[in-house]
Length: 68
Image (cartoon, rainbow, N blue to C red; front, side):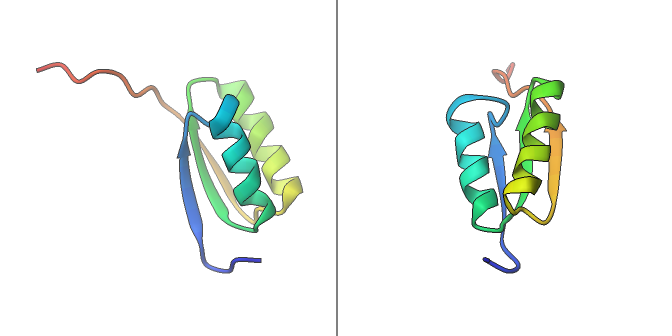
């Protein structure tokens, strides 16, 4: 277990972001997982907790282009 470490993963609702989140969960990191799909993030949070993450915070957001 990696005590005291945390990670913020964007694009976590699917693909590479999801797999990175699960890999960190297996290492015992606390996670903040961000993405657009609320249901996918909730499922990921459950799976990450089961994989060993002591705390998972799902964040629904969309990062788009900045308007100037």
